[in-house]
Amino acid sequence: MSKINVCSEWGELKEVVIGRPLDEDDCIFEWTTGMDQEFSWLKPDTFRFLKENSGKPWKNANPELFAKINDQVGYYVDTLGKHGVTVHRPDRLVNEDRNYINRGIEQIWPRDCFCTVGSTVIVASLRMPWKRKQQFSLARLYTQKLLAGECTYVSAPQPSTEILSTNTHEAEKTAILLDGGDFLVHGRDIYLGQGHGSNALGARFAQAALGEEYQVYPLKLADAALHLDCTIALVRPGLGIICRDWLVSELPPALQRFTWIEATAEEAAWLGVNGLPLNPETYLVDAAHTRIIRELRSHGVEVVEVPFDGPSYLGGSLRCASQPLIRQEI
Image (cartoon, rainbow, N blue to C red; front, top):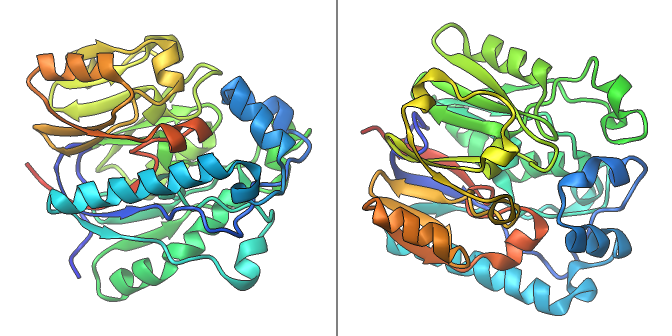
C-alpha cells in the first residue's frame, strides 16, 4: 500500500475508489418528510421516479435502468484499468449496516463521503442520512492505511437526522454539513460549495481541521445545484468547465485567471461538468456531452468518452462515482 496523496484535481491518478454497482436486493431510499422541499435539485423525472418507488428494490423499480447503471459502472472501472489506474471497490454493506437510518442503499457515490487533501481524509457530514453508511464500506481500506501511517483520518461531527426533515432550517443552525461533492482541491486552496450539501459550519470545520496550511473558500451555489462539482470542474492548470447559472459567489482570485468552458444549466443538470481528470492532458467525460467534448478537444485536451447517462439520471457522474487515493504531484 502507498501513502494517500491528493494535492489537485488533475494530478496523475494512480489509485482511486470507484463505487459499487447496485445489488439485486439494494432498495431505493425511503422517502421521508422534508425530501419534497430538499430535493428541488433533482431532475423532475428522477424526482417522480424515486418518490413513486420509495423503498422498492432498484431492479424491480426499473430493470432496464438497473442493468444500464451496472453495465456503465463496470465499463468505467475497465476504462480506468486500461489507463493504468489501480481501482479499489467499497465492501458490500451487509447485516444491520444495510438498514442504518434508512433501508435505502446506493454505493455508487464514494466521493460524497470523504474529503481528501494531501494525506488527510475527512469523513464527511452528510445531509442525506442513508448515504452516511457508505463510510462503513470503506472502513477496512482506510483502517489499513491509517495503521500503516499512510493517512490521517478525521471525522466531522454527524448531524441529527432532523437535518433532512420539516425542521431542516432550525437543525442547520448547529449542524456541520460537509460533503465531498462540494470539496475541490487546488494546491493549498480548497473550494467548498455551500448549498444542498455543505454549509457555513462545514467550511469552518474544514478550515479548523486542515489548519493554516490551507485556505478554504466557501462558494455559494444556486438552488438547482446539488454540489460544487456539478458546477465547476478543474480540468488542468488554467482550464476548467463552469455553469455560471449555478454559481452565486464570485470566483476566488486564482480561478479568475482560468479559461472557462461554459456549460448550460441543462448540461449541468445532466452532469456535464462532472468529469474526472486522469492527468493534466487527459479527461474522462460522459459520452453524452458531445458539445462539451468538442470544446475540451478544441483546447487540446485528450478526451476519453465513458457512457454514464444511467448513473447521471440519478444525479451523479464520473467524479461523484470516484474517491481519489493517490494523485501524483505535477
